[in-house]
Image (tube, rainbow, N blue to C red):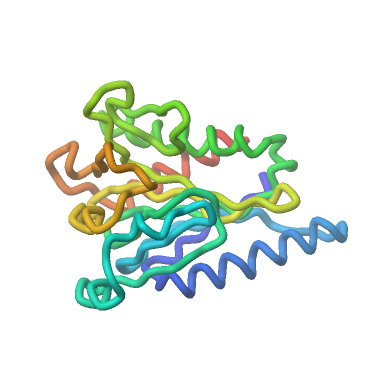
Length: 219
């Protein structure tokens, strides 16, 4: 399988966005020109940052610039789908930069695959997760009043090449979600693996597990 896995460790969001974009542009250029290319699966963590997608509403960010600075967070308007989300330490972020056509996937199938990989990771830790109709991402108790999101997903695709991806809350500081309407929702909460299991989880172990799930589904 033509897929290179890279762990960037902890990286500033602005740097990761630039590196992602460069990688994405190279892949699109190579694909359109019949040149050889590599698909990439990139894993990382970010310092505290909020990102607002193309269809997001500015009002879902509840802090001023001064307040953002006071909590040590940055804020970016970016080119993925979806609304506002938070990234920070203890959260596993995964950026697949892949040619969907090579894997015989449409965009909806691809998002479903990302959700399935995270559902598999959660299951391996004894956490029952699933999907919520008309709400991208991975949820716990999705069909109840206690529905809470454990993983956000937002992607961009051009010429069937993807970038951006998913963010799985592992040992995330959940207080940072209180400063936004996560993914635009005001009636649903967020959670983490640590919160559900009542103990910290190895981020490196989760990265490995997520990689295994994704590569298995992409075969």
